[in-house]
Image (cartoon, rainbow, N blue to C red; front, side):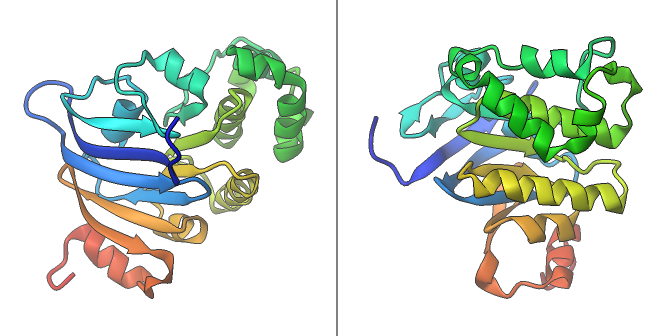
Length: 243
């Protein structure tokens, strides 16, 4: 493995579902201890980008490396086994299974199996609501609790990096706050994050850097210390004049 200061490096990624491409040559990186946000209007390629990194979609051109090794040609389950874990939006969890069963089932790679007990304990401490409901069926959970379970499932995969796609979608402000605390705690353990989010305040509270995804391209990179305020970001987001 090459010694690389980045957990994830993407160069010139083009991908889509049919013609034409949705991603038009995206390049970005996430450092080893970094939290990076992706924001931008709906339908401009953020989810497509995460799906391409995790090989749900095959890239047409470009390269993806994780921890200094190319992963472009790996099957999705091999990427998870390397420790790059993707928590998609609109979680599709098994409705009739108990929460504890779903969490244990998520630790299916060899590395995750070895860490199962430790990670399960961590997830239940991180999300006390899941601990209280661990014997309940998934379908009895609220939307917010299902989102916590989705992130818990991601953590059971023993991630070396986590990609979260709109974790706050449809959540109340109170639950968003709870989730922000949990995500900050996860990243304080040295797990790099790539976070797709529509809620600007939420993303600003959590990340070191942000990329604006606009029509399948990265149109702007914003560093945390860049003194960019909320209104300026809203201007970029909605494409106002003078942004």
